[in-house]
Image (cartoon, rainbow, N blue to C red):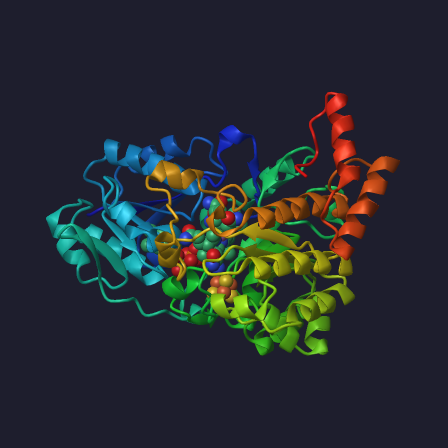
Length: 522
Ligand code: B12
Ligand code: SF4
């Protein structure tokens, strides 16, 4: 009988050599989602997540013995490099084994993968059904990549293939409603491994990437058990700086709230957890669904809290009653992308958040003691310096007005697959070319595109990014000088006084004199 084993690999998100650690409340959702229909179709799925498996490369190579396919997924960042490293090793060990890629980054840049020596096809967009069809094609070809398999792939929807020296897409795969898809294959991973890793990384002094501030009682550093969950696919918005409109086709399909809560209860019974991290691009598109979810979660009496990304426009449309229900159900943190302060830039980026709404949304969260993670971007192609300045000033305003709001400003960086990618390239942006370069393309702050941002705005941004953590109490120590500087930072943010920060310069000089690392780049 032909093999039915398939090996799925999620590459590491954080380069181990830089000393940072990954946030372990992020499970390999993309793999859990594509694994369950594959299992239902009779395949045996092995999942290897580099986050919990330090010897992932060796494990992948071992597991591929007798497999019908190897497949992997990544999003932009170190994962791109790590995924390429492992796939190369698999191809070397099993040259005839089909290798497939899917997920956001390969969907946005299939050419990079299809031109490499370790990719036979890229799945574009939603992947559950495409994956099953890919595996069935492999099974029919006895797990051998070659002309026979490539001929079969031509008739599978939702693929990017290499034909006549260029990328060719098969028909776009219709989006399947989440209600029609099976529950993610949680049984393929051991959640205790993630909980233990989270407990180890929670220790003071560790730098943890993509960690969310935990709510009380976990805000004192005690470990929590965190799960991530995906309850809706896509986003209806057309934002030009984001790759979702192209890859998810502006569809938004959300799991029925009753089914969602039933699944969360079942998951809790097997692996009790404290915090749910929703990974939906836009959790709250439908107020009715959010309300039902909250009502059911409250009724379930699960002792859990939850966070997620919700659009500013939606929070402003929700009734006070819905917001109260959210709070009561354990909603502790909302992620918001305000992206720009001016109407002119909102129009340019097609986000169209009307004036005053960001303030209103932050106020509504603050009144309920729900934290807000608010982000802005400056330097979009075509944005005016005046608008960039306004954005920095608004970010500061949100911070001092609503201390429960984190308010960060990132210099723009073109994202492949987004509407602004081509205009950015035309305006002189040179993106990474190799897997290795893409793997180094990680943080916005370090891989920004400064080309559009004039020096005086860059200086203003730098000052904001130094003053903000002082104001939040995350810079300096607990002594009286630090307290004074915290006050000074608040005064500056509130009054828009970014010039001549002599008190911070003096502090830096004293630290340097004492042989310590300077605290600021003012
Ligand atoms: C969770 C998440 C993260 C997590 C990490 C998740 C992980 N797996 O490692 C964290 C918080 C660390 C993160 C970080 C970043 N992220 Co992020 N993230 C997400 C988010 C919110 C959810 C992803 C997810 O789990 N989805 C759930 C699963 C079920 O859905 P899916 O990933 O779409 O998978 C489906 C298909 O893609 C497909 N599929 C996926 N893999 C495969 C494989 C095969 C073989 C097949 C057949 C199909 C297939 O089938 C799946 C089921 O339908 C998405 C937005 C979104 N809502 O999807 C952004 C998103 C993926 N991130 C994005 C970005 C820009 C980043 C950052 C670069 C941001 C930054 N700070 O600079 C960083 C760096 C990334 C890194 N490598 O560390 C972009 C995409 C960038 C890109 N083109 O790759 C997205 C789309 C957000 C956006 N709209 O801009 N992110
Ligand atoms: S930036 Fe957010 S709201 Fe805009 S399209 Fe992307 S996911 Fe949707």
